[in-house]
Image (cartoon, rainbow, N blue to C red; front, side, top):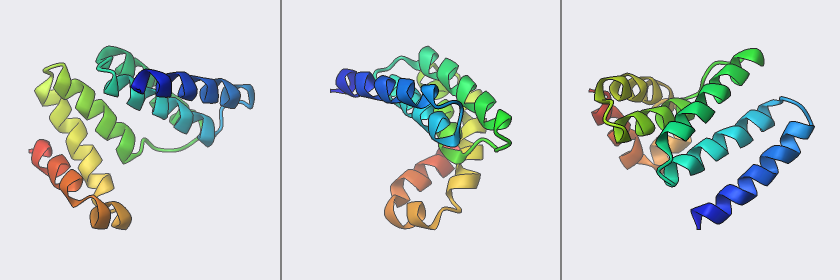
Length: 117
């Protein structure tokens, strides 16, 4: 199922890329990275996420908590625990301020906090 999702997300990304680098394009790129992680393509996901971070900076925006979270999960899966912990901390610091996420995904927020150390 994730393979089919990846194909759709990549088509969506190509559509967005044709429109230039906008926040929607970067979000589409993040979706590809997330799907790569779900497919256990951790190194590829990290590479994609590096591009996401670079493009956010070019757009004058900071890396959001969801990017930190994806990076943390990939690093943890690759056994890079110390690096993952730093990313989990950054993710928790940002995402714990999201009222909707806190109210609707408390287990996720708690996991970020516990992985942050």
